[in-house]
Image 1 (tube, rainbow, N blue to C red):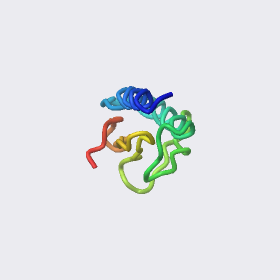
Image 2: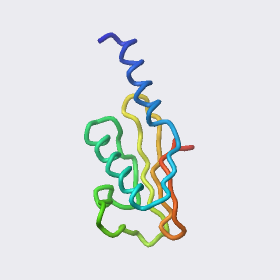
Image 3: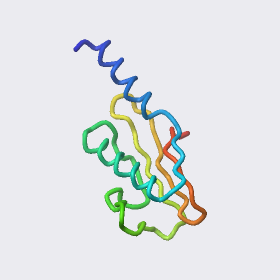
Length: 102
């Protein structure tokens, strides 16, 4: 595959990730955490940081905590470096997958 074709594939991959997905329920949050783990495993994303272990976010298990009222993970695309955040407010509810502003 030529370099130009690779850039097109990379942009298409990022275009799928480059949107805000509201997460109104814990179940939906855990679904996206599972999808993010898969993207890290296949090399699409790297985990930059998180306040709890990503692998501890499992459907059917209690949410882990670090003493704060939120869970947050920052990811970077391995192709272009764009950053995305997966977060949840564990006290008030809600959360999202969205492009990071940092």
